[in-house]
Amino acid sequence: MHVRWNERDNKKRGTAKVGDVKNEGVENKLTMNTDIFPALYPIYHLSKLCGLFPVRFTKQANGRCEGHLNVIDVIYSLCLFGLIMSLEGLGLWRELRDGWENSTRLKNRTAVIPTASDILSVIILATIAVLGSPFRWKHEKNVLNKLAEVDEMMGIVALKKTRRYTIALTACTLPYLLITSSLDMYWWDCDSKANRKMDDKGPINFFPIYIMYTIIIILEIQYSLVTYNVGQRFVRLNKCLENILKNGKMTDHFRKDLGLAGDFKSREQPMTYVRQDPVHLRVSKTLERYPTAFERKNVANKIAQLVTVHSSLCDTVSSINNAFGLVMLAITLTCLLHLVITPYFLILEAKNTAVIVSQLLSSSTNEECRKHLEVFSLQLLHQPLDFTACGLFSFDRTLITSIAGAVTTYLVILIQFQKEDHTKDDVDNILKNATQILKNASSLHNLTTMKLNI
Image (cartoon, rainbow, N blue to C red; front, side, top):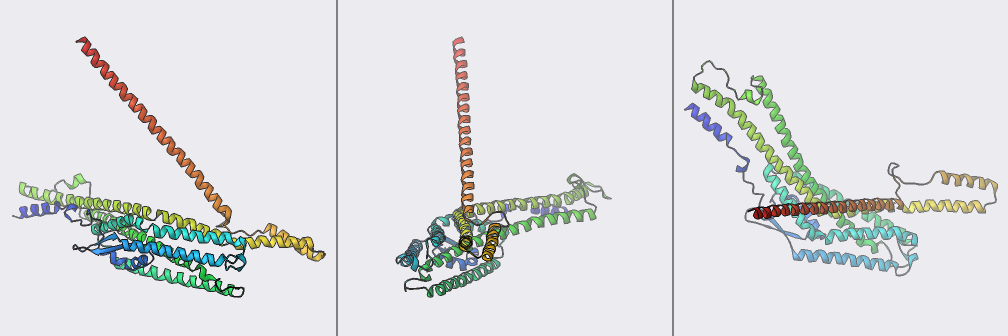
C-alpha cells in the first residue's frame, strides 16, 4: 500500500503541465485586462480631453474592458485640432497685419527665422499627434493585449504602483508646464507693454502654441507610461529567472550535504540498502529517480513559459515602435531645432558686437581708445562665442545641415544595397529557372531516347 501511494503521488506530480493553466489572455477578441485599465485612468481622460485617444471602453460579461474607436471622439479630435489651428492662424494675422515693427516677437526679419521655425515645428508635431491618434490605436490595442497576456502568465505586476506612477508623472509634468507657460507669457507681456502701440498685439496671439505644447506633453506621458509598464514586466521576468537560478543552486547545495551530488546518471542509480529484496529496490529507485525528474520537468516548464513571456514583450516593443515611431522622430527633430534656436539670438548679438567694435576702430582718432579697441578686436577674434555639447559639435545652423547630409548619405547607401540585393535575388531566380529548364529538358530527352529504343 505504501509503495502504491508513492508511485501514485509521484505520477500525479510528474504529469503537471504549464498548459493545464488556463490562459484567458489569448483570445480572438482584442480585449484588455480589466486591471490594466483603471491603472491608466488619469492619463486616459487627459488624452481624451486633448484629442489624443478617441477610444471608449465597454465592460464585458467576462470582467474585461473592450476598447474601440468612437466616431464622436474622432470628430471631437478633428474639431479641436481645427479650432486650435484657426486660432493660431488668426493670432499670426493679428500680429503681422500692421507690419513687423509693431509685432511682439517678430519685430525684425532676423527674428522671423527662429520664431517661424519654432512655431512650424510645434504645429507639425501637434498635427502628427492629433491626426495620427486613430491610426495609433490599432498598435496601442495590441500593446495592451500583450501586457494582459503577460500579466496572466506571470501574475499582475503591481498595478497600484503603476497607477501611483501615472498620477505622480502627470502631477509633476503638467503643473510645471503650466507654470513655465504662464511665466513666459507674463514676461513677454511685460516686455511688450512699454512699446505696445496697438491693443491687438501681445502674447495672447501665441496662446494656441501653448495649448499645442500641452498636447505634445500628454503624448510624451503616454509613451513614458507604456515603456514603464513594459519595463516592469521585464523586471518580473528577470526576477523569475533569478529565482530559478537561485533555487537550482540551493538544490545542488542540499544534495551535496546529503551525499546525493553528481551527474544525472549517478542520481538515477539506486543506493545501497541493507535489504536488497526486489520490493525495496523498486522503492529506492522510485524515490531516487522521480523527484529529480519532476524538478527538471517543472523547471523546464517554467523556462518555456518565460520564453513565451519574453516573446510577447518583444512583440509589445515592436507595437510601441509602430505606434510612436513617427511621433518620436518628430519630437527628436523638434528638440534638435529648439537646441539650435535657443542660442540663435545670442550668437547674432555676439556677431553684432564685432561689427560695432570694427566701426568704432575705424572712426576713432584717440590713440588710447584705438589701442583698447584693437585689444578688444583681438579678443573677439581669439575668443569667439560658441555653444557646444562637450566640444563635440556646435549648436548652430551648420548642425542641421550636417545631420541632413549624414542622413541623406545613409539613405543613398541603404537604397543602393537594397537594389543590389534585389538584383542578386533576380539573378539567383534566373539561374534557378534555367537550371530547372535544363533538368526538364534532360528528362524529356532521356524519355524520348527510351521510347525510340523500344
